[in-house]
Image 1: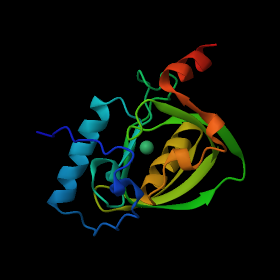
Image 2 (image 1 turned 90 degrees about the vertical axis):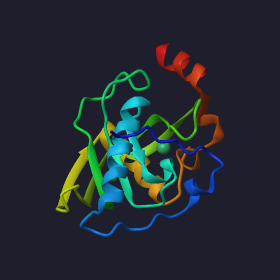
Image 3 (image 1 turned 180 degrees about the vertical axis):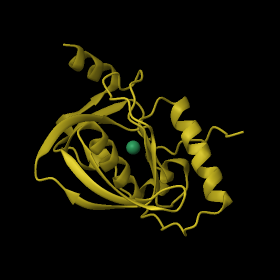
Length: 175
Ligand SMILES: [Zn+2]
């Protein structure tokens, strides 16, 4: 049975470290980690999760854009597990949008992100893949990819005036 993992929060040094590449083919500790991360992500209404957020400093992330209480307008997409992802291309077109982070509960911020990205990664079967993402899934990817470099969305807001608590964020988006 997969288990619910504890989420590291802002202030823990694991969130500020650059992650290590994962040897492929995957061995059982990483396979278990992926199962547990998927399970955890579903339980906490997240749209993405990176390994440092569960105290593991490895290059592994999941993007799982789907509508939930925290992101009601998210598109419904199958989750993608990316091992050793590499950001190959960012579109010059950008978009401002609200982000939150499971590791920074209660806070939201407006972050400028590339509208589209091209990414290469290894999948769970050890195969190399290339994918192009646009819009919300591209935003989720860029957010999770930042985690692998020890970066957080609060580092990306143009100014602290672009931060809001969850309560005020709900007020803003509902107005
Ligand atoms: Zn995050």
